[in-house]
Image 1: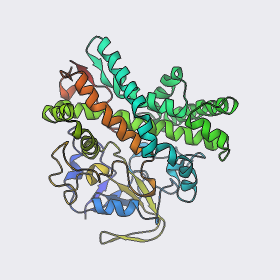
Image 2: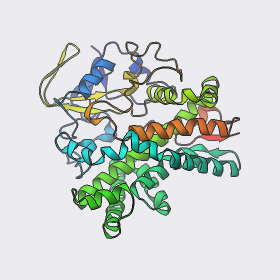
Image 3: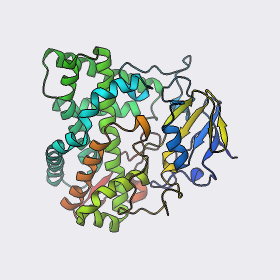
Length: 395
């Protein structure tokens, strides 16, 4: 069995998993974590689903080894502290208590009601692009503003304060920054949201955060943690998918043409883009609560398991010819939104934003193309979420 020295994250090709991952044989591998502890890397689809569905694996940060050095806690600390309300890093029953309060706000019915407004936001950003002088950075002009404006409206963040949280969030998730810098950015973001919660308590509006405040089930710190999670997860992931996904489509013009001209392709294209790009490339990460058999091995209690979504979503046993990008493929079981109780709460919102945004962009600008050679597009391989730092385009 191969043993890896920490998790590979550098991609030789912007659209392919790291070459080291593609050379592995089997579904489960020994991996030395950044702090020297031994653990495991899962690259098989069935095995990944098994881990994500098994309550014997904890999703808290307690005891987890860092798969890369940038995720190691500051010197002197053994674990990062999870703030109240940040339920992504909690196990049941705490996780379910928070999630129960939010599920209705992200239901399919709720998403259908939001569709007209999301389309308005998309069209507004495309109008701004059309008025601008090409070339433009698609990340700044479209990919980042669309999900940011949507989650701002959903939560009740004033429009004029959008840029403040965008920049702070970007600093918090950039692994090129030191852990102290990321921690300071995270603290700044939570400070802002704590202030916003106070404003909602004094003057509630017609938004999700106001409903949570007036519901009375969460205290101030919990509300701040929930808002931080929703605001961060609600725009950073989708923004990176819109940027990196457009980059890929512009490099595959025959696939872009299908998205542009066939209304029935948008849904399958979103799933295939999620599968093929796998922008959540550092985890999910779990810690075994007890000894668990998996893929012919025994994961010992206390050992850390990292799931490589770039590898899992290219498992040929689940996705035939996995390195072929095909927007008509049925990739609905891809694990880009995770699986099990921690499956992404906002996945239907993200799907809707992408399903509307990609065709609208390509139809509005049928001559859309890269303004620089593909090899000069700056990537974000060290971000907690993989993507492009900028995408210069013209038309």
